[in-house]
Length: 160
Image 1 (cartoon, rainbow, N blue to C red):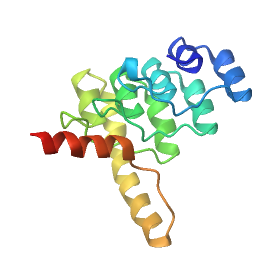
Image 2 (image 1 turned 60 degrees about the horizontal axis):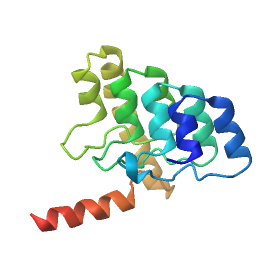
Image 3 (image 1 turned 45 degrees about the vertical axis):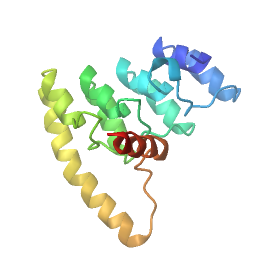
């Protein structure tokens, strides 16, 4: 676990800010010992919107996935963090991706009884779909996929 992972997991905004300012750590580094979580996954799991915003402002990709296919939105949904989900939606993060079990963040929020998050995610998906369609029509790239995870998923499916 990198210093940045540790600081994000501890919700230590000041330490995260210092590490990013010094450019000592990659905000997109996946920690293989913790299922490929990035610092943004940790911030989302903690419901720490300020740290999540800081990480995104420093290049953290909200589409990156853990070994089980969870995006930061899955972790925010599990935690019931409407603030983090709103932040992710505002930067056009994917809020609709299926994890390795086929569950989307809205389903995770539903499992944990976070009704406000479920309602938000259902509305946000409609808006996100419209945005992706508009962006595609204008040739605007959307950072929606974790290429590494998708490639690994394809290899795993080929083994079955």
